Image 1 (cartoon, rainbow over the protein chains, first blue to last red):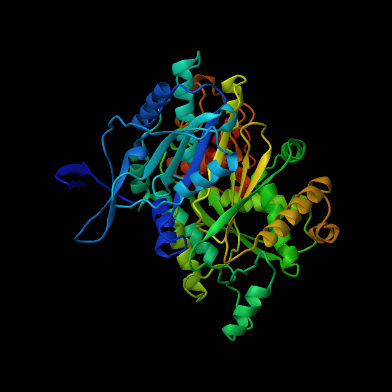
Image 2 (spheres, each protein chain N blue to C red; image 1 turned 90 degrees about the vertical axis):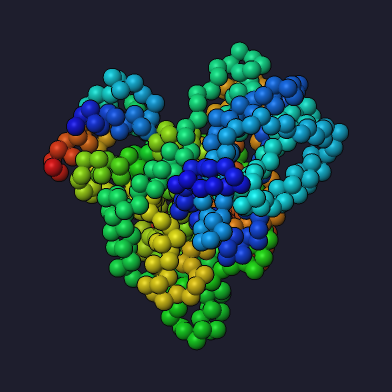
Length: 468
Length: 74
């Protein structure tokens, strides 16, 4: 619909369920006003500032969601999004080459923590940067209502590919897809046959018994809540931070170990995400008196079509991935059950996740803000891992910067490193909800369970737990 | 139905539609991963107006398997 914004008429669209999911975290105060993603991509080659500025401009022109703005209707308070036309931009340059890497990271973390005014115009910032050791590139900070991690990767990759094609004999990247077309597809989903099927599926899940909250620190938090609410049978948990302050701890799995998991995945025709989820799930069972009913919040990128892979914007949804397994379940059975549960989520992942979680709480009379999942998980297969081949020997590095806030109490991301393909595990956590020691403990046992499992796929969960 | 299926497949993977045959395997030949397949099946359910049994459909490894499955559902 056409709206007059600042004297100019724009085609405006309502926010999508994925955007509303992100904004709900801000509304809940979980991450304060800061809901940013900060990244830096750097090549170890001499910087050509003019070419990089040109590449950045071309990439912004090609990517509609980089030009997305949000407008609040003053009469209804409803939020709308629209795309402004491309205008050539001047990108600042900062030379940090004489600084230490730690000091640069400190500055870029600080930049990432600067809030954007959601309805005040541009929702991103790009700065050309020189780092120590001859690395040059750009820092990119964007509001999470504009982009999720998949589109950040797609956009930054586009910049590097354009830059390299301007300077070297490398092919010019294919065009990006339209973001607004993806918004239109999301709008067409509402009330469609597919939405009805998805709704039926999620309603059917509500007919099952109440899930069980299993905390990554063990049963103590649930026990405490039960005492406070004088309800010995309470199954929902409450895990929230008052200020959203948080941090990310990164663990790097070596290439050889990563290859072991990948070979196992290939041998048994299983997805990596299900294998890692099996490890996290088993650790939660181990920490919670061998609980058989475990729910993890599974994040789905919803970028399966070619258009959705390259349209930018925010498409990430999350849903409760619930599995009930007796301790006699074998590793292979466990991973296959998780895969099946995940497959079902994938098929029905266009459904509004806020509605899904809301209906679940309502059905079982859980308090507002309650949860059955203490851990959110995503496996990010679409990374910059293929950049190495394209850059033909040019060293490349990618860094994610912290805004100092976290949207979730415990958000684990598994992602392949661009340089060697090894797995990185990012543990994003809210400091009121976890300590670095608890994270270390969680990662340590996740790793142990993971490798004991792939070495012993026919052992039962009980045996794996006893071995670790 | 085969032509419609080819169109659907090409929304998910970069392949020449003419190279898709009934024997094409989703993962090995067409480059699908399990996530893409499940999402495509969600769309196919609507496109072909059939009910999918998630467990049964995962046995379909080739385009022909899937066409037979949908054919049997009509």
